[in-house]
Length: 180
Length: 273
Image 1: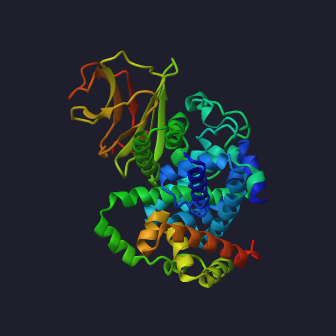
Image 2 (image 1 turned 120 degrees about the vertical axis):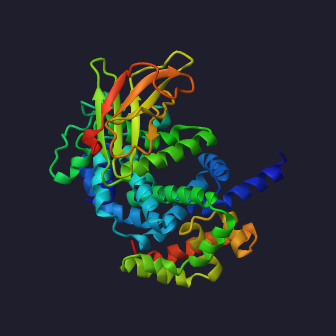
Image 3 (image 1 turned 60 degrees about the vertical axis):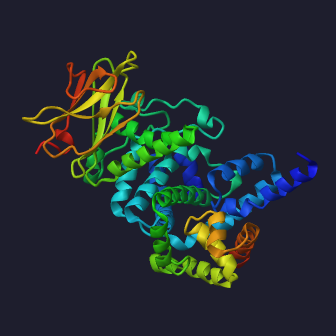
């Protein structure tokens, strides 16, 4: 069964459907959360919270507004970003700089993930973006920085970052259009 | 605000669609943009499209989660009530978890069966785990940022205890339906403790939680905050035999000044070696 159908069953309290949904989405959810949060223990906590939240609020999923997988990953990303920002707020600036130096925005993507067609495609499409588009998008999405922080890190005006983000996403859409 | 300024402001808001889709707005901006979204059909469609694009970035990151996570999530699912659908959202009063501690909620006719021995850690997870797990998500219903931060911090502590490989739940209910529940990890020496059904105390009185050990005075583990708010107890030590709750004057007492109103043995959750 597809995630969409399963989520509807889950909304009705079907625990078997949830088990099946877990099989489908736990990998994407955990991988995304770990990519953003990085710390393994914290990633596990956040992923666990997200998966429980799926069970709890499956009824809020509106199939008319997009796919279940998008909804789920959007939720996971939001929670991961919230976690990484509150953790970051607690770390002093110097440590932060040191960590940034260790974690370049994009290079790490491929190291942490399983080999797969999707990964190759995303990577290839990211490579086709301009450097600024790629950095704007990946610093925000994979590293959880706000667009203001991205602007600061890249020494760009806010307006430019917003435009690069939009163009970057639109280019990705064109490039990845064939893969679904 | 002049028309021009308003148009400018609008244009400015529109340009936040991409950062919003990437979760790259600060909380206040996020709220402002979401308010704007409600009245802007064009932005709605645009944000949906950009969000779908952003999700494509997630495809490349999938990784297998730790095997033990599955058991913990599925166990917690069995103990967690679901929220009502989109219309009701935050305003629907949630079914108090203890109500279905002994009785499954509607729509869950399929009785969960213990098919695998490694579900044992949560085998007793009824009311206790339900209360505890529910508090993880109570977070979203709250309004003020301070409260939100405090509750998030607590939810994190709770999640930490729940995530322990040896986390187990236990609960005790008296004939009047009042209950005490705990999810505890002996390896971490931590427990999340909830009281339910004891009602509000007269002003100037609090519920205080104590750790009982052999050959030692009771040690205070903290004060309950009221309602079903759980208390996270730390440094329990392997020798702990039980938890006890007394009613004490505001601010708590160094030692109990009254008989416990309830006690909960910790042997079944791995303590008392």
